[in-house]
Length: 253
Image 1: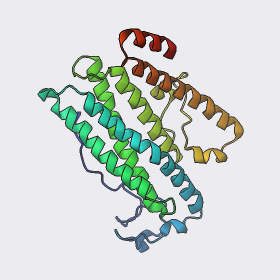
Image 2: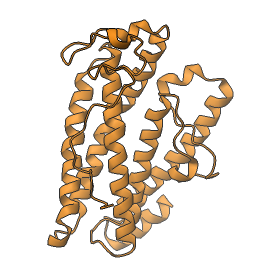
Image 3: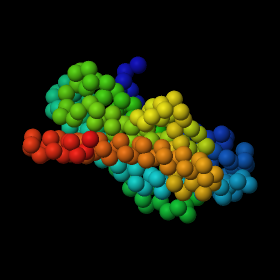
Image 4: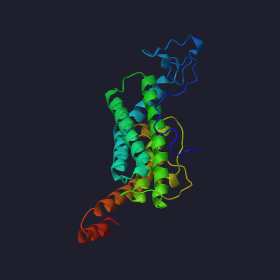
């Protein structure tokens, strides 16, 4: 399969078990009586006795998205600016550009959608985000491998591309956890105990967990962001003149 297939494809509404193609609620119980249309959702989420808990889970994901979708767009812009302007690499530039545009548009929709919107609309936004950011992760992973093997040119260090890939993986893992799924392990996020499943979870859902698990999440978050911010400092230090750079590098590491 061509590694570029699908990267710039327009997002489609995610599939749902409801036979009505215009219903965006994965827990719809209306069956063939579902009256959702493209313009109006019928409120079938209320037919689920756990609809309030579902809405709370999606709102928790949306609150994470209000911050992280913008960061994902900035990652794409950063990669776009750091690629060598080589005609042979035009496809990389165009892919990064498309990600920057689509993520920017998605961020505008996220911040303009209130938490009181129908659950189905919030679910649709969450699923679109997961789909697009997973594509971005694959792009980052492929670009990292190509840079590391000197098959692509950029002013970006390969390790910096892997750095932003880990941030994106944590973000998607957090959104998946709002659905009850655990999809990332610690190795994917670059923290110790690599084969252990990562405890990523939206912060607004911590109240559902026992204190022991919240403590475990806190330890994991500290390990993840300590490394992330150390790498931020290291990469910033590389921008200074050599004598200052070395001083900052020692302080950062």
